[in-house]
Image 1: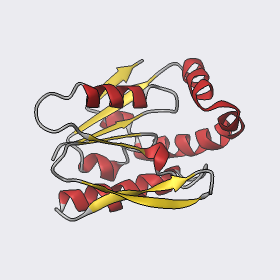
Image 2: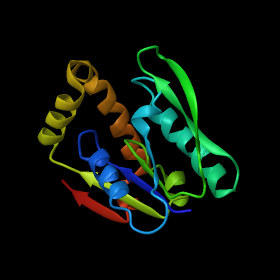
Image 3: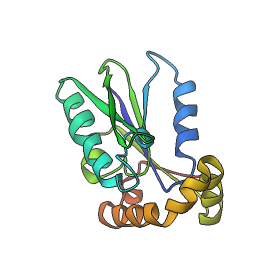
Image 4: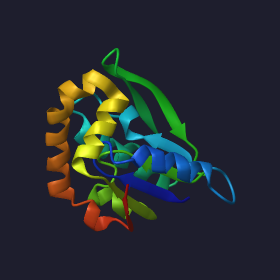
Length: 162
């Protein structure tokens, strides 16, 4: 099983890159694509989702055990349905917090995506609107803490400027 992790700051282009990689996949089964946005348990959930990515998805897959992830219902502010992941398919995971040190050890390829701070904030707010505008500083503080501790850019196989 091939595991690809794509990380970078909000609005940098991770989702677009992941979707293009999946769409252009040549040979064999198309990868399963997991968006960490679907896993964060609320606006303070970056660390939790990063940890769950390892314990519920990557470690079990590498050990040949059943693996998956639970979707977060943002509207209901609660955990929702479970999504099993087939170990026979390649896996692409994208999102802020995808490349913790432990996750990187379990991956075959790691990609860091970056963009100018003004441009990425514009993209993120255009994509997610006023709700994200109110939460931008809260989210960015978590992100910066994660990056300072985990150093994901330094662990990247490739760095992609957008």
